[in-house]
Length: 227
Length: 227
DNA sequence: ATCAGCAATATTGTCAACAATTTTGTTTTT
DNA sequence: AAAAACAAAATTGTTGACAATATTGCTGAT
Image 1 (cartoon, helix red, strand yellow):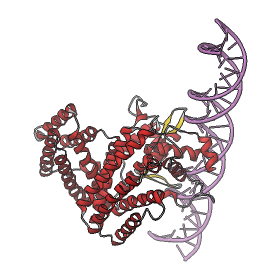
Image 2 (tube, chains in turn brown, purple, orange, red):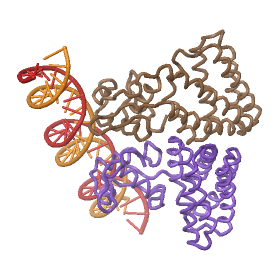
Image 3 (tube, chains in turn cyan, orange, green, brown):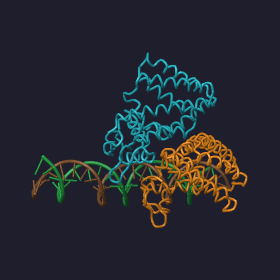
Image 4 (cartoon, helix red, strand yellow):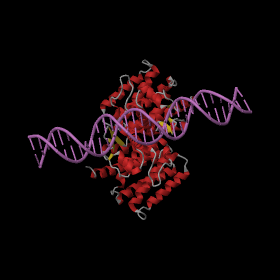
């Protein structure tokens, strides 16, 4: 979340600042509530968040600047479409960025965060007992995010946030099988251990392999939703 | 340059679309014509580019969304300040991104681009004969950019463009000594060879070392300009 | 029934006027 | 002379009206 978003939200969760509106839209894209290609009509957004038109327009322009929506002259904003090639590129960039984050986190002197990471890990190890796939997906998010935070690099965090939006909903959509969760968690365990032990290079290479494996899964999932 | 910028420029190089204005400002920041902390008064920008106010405002908001300028309520936009810590983070992110780019370029089947890279390299090898530091700096830009292009990853390209803006002018400012240019070029040669030969891992690790070395230099340069 | 063409509507783009706030300059007070 | 208080100017924020374009609905010819 960027700096200007502080507390400018209405009572029931509707944002009022341009930054807040952008975040609101971004979150909906992330959750799959706004799908690629969907048009974001200003008036509709205004109705839903209750903000002024200029604010909504500004929010949309911001999202375009960051590459999440497309704006065509006199046709307005729509959620940017992505295909297999974009997914591939996103995952490759994630390999680089999260690999770096894992390495820097491992090298960092941050015992508190590392304990926190370990805590998430143990929670994930018990996923079958408690909450099932839904719960695991949430912990998975937290785990990745914590590693980004642990690296303490603003730019990496920003880029990662950008990259995670268009693919996030794919991960929540049904295709989380028991087998895949177990595979992913096996990766997680190795990476967590490497970070906690301070083995930067191991953490980086393991993270890369982990994300690379994720790419294959997501491409398969995406193919089934293909038009 | 993003998609909407096509040809909406006035006769003598002044942009008229919001995207074009953003680019115009970004370029001035990159060249050090607008320095960190400098306030970007709307009226001044309007005078210089001859665009309407709403366009200029939109451009500034875009730049804020991307993190290049700060906007404070009723105080307007100013070029975001960066210190040693930001520089460090930028260079670490660059290590990850350009390292990835070098590896993917090496692995790619792009003989034409690779020949082009080799051509730039041979030009850089002759820098003492032709043009001196200024010329080398320009070729250096082209070389790095070509590697990004060679990787063919839109996201990496976008992030790299973002990262290069705040540090670019530091590289042009006087402190390009003969020694440093020779060191840099020695790195370049190794990396170019690795890419042309298709040795992805070598290209990546060499690129990382190269950028890491650059960090040390830039930090030193920056320290001399410290307030 | 289908299609082209036209009218009506909806949506976005642009601009100018006004309000809110900060910044600068001047005067007053000590 | 220095500091405080006030006034003037400059700057940014916001809103609303209108223009430009796209989208939709309708009519009639075939």
